[in-house]
Each structure stands twice: as structure tokens, then as C-alpha cells.
Image 1 (cartoon, one colour):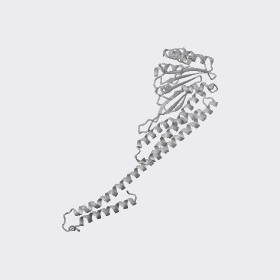
Image 2: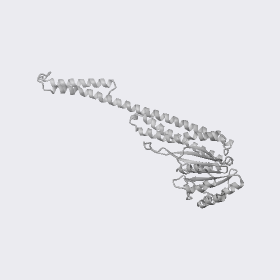
Image 3: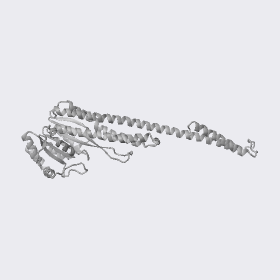
Image 4: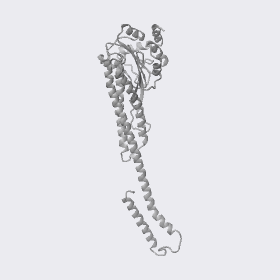
Amino acid sequence: MSMAGNLRKVTSLGRVGGLRKVARLARRGRRVDLSHPARSPLGSSVVNCVTYRDGARVPGGSDLVDTVERVRKHGDGFVWLGLHEPTDQEFAGIAELFELHPLAVEDAIEAHQRPKLERYDDVLFAVFKTVCYVEHEELTATSEVVNTGEIMVFVGEDFVITVRHGMHGSLGPLREELEADPQQLAKGPAAVLHAIADHVVDDYLHVTDLLQADIDQVESDVFSQNGARLDPGRIYQLKRELLELKRAVVPLARPIEELSTRPIRVVAPEIQAYFRDVSDHLLRAKEQIAAFDELLNSILQAHLAQVSVAQNEDMRKITAWAAIVAVPTMVCGVYGMNFEHMPELRWTFGYPLVLGVIAVACLTLYRGFRRNGWL
């Protein structure tokens, strides 16, 4: 299919009208964002489509077809197209227009991918796992602490396509930060890729800082006076949520390393230096997660040890009281056998004497157990 045919197919998807609405909203100073559960206010998966030249937003460009044609005709600038959970039909025309690889397109639509970096000719396809901290009043065995999403990024010579999945991780604020730094944005699509990677990794550090408070609270509860009665489900829940965060952070190390060290056509050497900074932040997040995992293991072991000690103390108390009760039980059992010749059976003070002996014996045992810490 020719380029003209590809462009017309994009137009037939009905997205152009939505893009004109983006332009009208932008001229009125209103922002179009997807940080809420609903889909795009445009009624489709398109969040925004903007052309940048020399680090500045190019006015107009409400028609995607004309925007791409103009960028490719002049040979400078790039298009940043943002999407949110597009369907197969919504993404088909874009995939043909920008000549995206079918495997990458499938991954971008289906989501649930591991963080990775793939090269398809002159197009990079990167997957980032986004995370956010779920606020909660009290940590329970069923509390959701970490929520994850995904951002897929296609990077070419003259375009950046971001596909976001999930109800958090909006790139609207990031776009505004980049537009406030024209010098960085002028470095092209690779600068956008770096900004997204840096934004995602900074969220990792933010979430780990918030997780620290939950772990500290659980640790304090475990070593409190009633720590043995703490619900161990809270510790297991934290470990599960930490594992979810680990699945997002650890696999990203290799893609960031490739972006910071290996020569890639669409990533200039000066941008690779920025990716090395992202790699340092990612390493810090990995180290914090590993430390949290070890700390939670230690907390869990300490809790189990406390439970074992508490059970031993309970068993000692039960045993001590059983020994004390055994004395009157034994004496009463002997005198209850109805023999005629029993010690002091016919003596007037025999009954009080036996009761006194029982009381003295029980008191002696009680003091002995108390002295040894059993009671």
C-alpha cells in the first residue's frame, strides 16, 4: 500500500476529528489528561498529537495526516503521538503509517509485558512498567500497596509514539516539563525516551520511599509487647507487593544498560550520558528493594520466633498449674477410696490438717514455679 493509502486509512479511523478537538482545547488553555479512570475525553484512544521543531511546539497540526506529511517533507522536527489503551482497529492505521513491526504492535496492544528494549530496523520499541503507591489507612492482609501499569514507546527518526496502559502514569505533566526545556527537547525523539525512562524510575524511588513507612510500621508492631499476636498476613502481603515492584524494576536494568552503552542509531551519544544517570537511579531502587526483601524476611523470622517463645511460655504455665492441681487431686483421690484405716481418719482435726497440707504443698509449688519464671 502506498503512503497516500496509509494516510487515508488513518483518516478513515475517525481520529482526525478528535485531534482537531485537541487543538481547540489547547488554544483555550485546557489540558487533556488521562489520569482518571475514564478513557480519553476525545472519545478515542488518542490523548495528544503534537509536532516539535527546534524544541518548540509547532502551532496547529490538528490533522495527523498533514502533520506527518509536513514533518517528513521538511526533514526536521518530530511528531509525538500519545495513546491510551488503543484497540486493534484504532492502532492499525498508525502502525501502517509509521511502518511499525507487527510483533511490537501486538505487544503494545495486548500489554502485560516485561520491561524490555527491542530494535526493528530503525525503530526502537521499549516497554516500561509503571508503578504507583496505593494509599491506605491501615495495612491489612489484603491491602493493595503497589499498583502497576505499562508504557510502550516507539521511537523513530521523526516520531515518538507512547502507548499507556493502566489508570496512572499520565505523561501530561512530563510533556509540560519537556516543553519548558526546549534545549533538551530539541535533541529529538531520544530525549523524549530518556524523559519517560527517567520519569518511570523516579516513580520507583518514590514508591520505595513510601513502602519504607509500611515496613517500619510492621517492624515496630512485631517487636511491640503484643508482637506475637500480629497477623502474619500483613508481612506476607508486603512481600507480595514488594515482589510486584521487583518485577517492574529488576528487568529494566538490561534495557537501560543497552541505551546507555551500546550504539543505537536513533539515540545520540549525548543522550546516552543521560541514560547512565537513569541507570544509577535504577540501581538505587534495586538495592532498596533487595534490602526491603531481606528486612521482611528477618521480620518474618523474628515474628515466628516470638510466636514459638509465646507458645513455650503458655505451655510452661499450663504445666505448672497442672502440677499444682495434681497435689489436691492426689490427696483427695487417696482419701476417697473408703478404707477404714486411713491416717488421722478418726481424729477431730484430721480434715483441717489434710487441707492445710494440701494448701502448703500447693503454695510451695506455686512459689517454686514463680521463682523459676514458669508463672
